[in-house]
Amino acid sequence: MKGLFTLDLQFLISQKRLFMVFLFIMAAFVFGGDSNILMSMAPLLIIIILIRSLLIEVEANNARMLFTMPFSRKDFVIEKYALIFGGAFLAQVIVLWISSFILKTSEAEFTGQILLQLLIISIPASILIPINLKFKSNSQIVTMFLSMALVLAVISLMEYQDELVSVFGQIGHIHPIILTASGVILIILFISVSMLISYQIVKSEEF
Image (cartoon, rainbow, N blue to C red; front, side, top):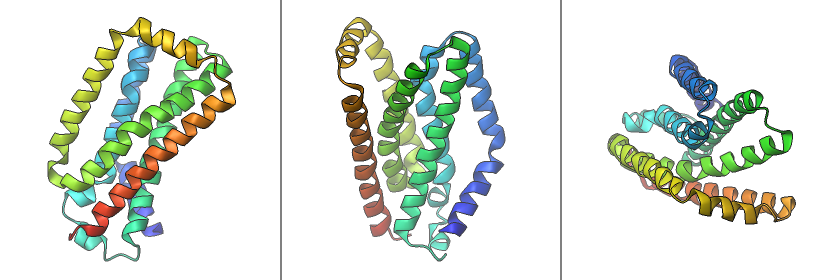
């Protein structure tokens, strides 16, 4: 598993130009005052970049050689999820930190945003990882359509902004510990179900 982690880490480092372009675009949104758009779209963009980068071995039909290395398919799934979710969360924290620094966000708001963004990251990632493992070379088309659907969903929700503000206002009255625990449980549930599906796909696949 250490060898797989090293290979993936080296590949991510080789993609530093892509990540630098992404950070530049994010910074442009923040300095341009469009932080709401940034917070809505950044998690999805981060997830797509990481998934496309880290699952390229399966898509390129190199998995037959890959699984001759000394690690199990279960290790493969765990390592991919750890890197994708860990990388997405780290990138999102950096984006939130830059945004909070410019917009003078309080520490309490910053902490709440981190939990919310982690939940937002968990949903598309939990859907897109199994899809990429299942469809391989066709996953790019599927991912594109799903991403467009998610973007349209976000835009549609903007039409109900007043209702959403009212709902979140009610949620704000819930005790922070209960709210945090509920968020953590949802995140664990999404990731666990997704990992189980991904493992079954990888386990049954004949590469």
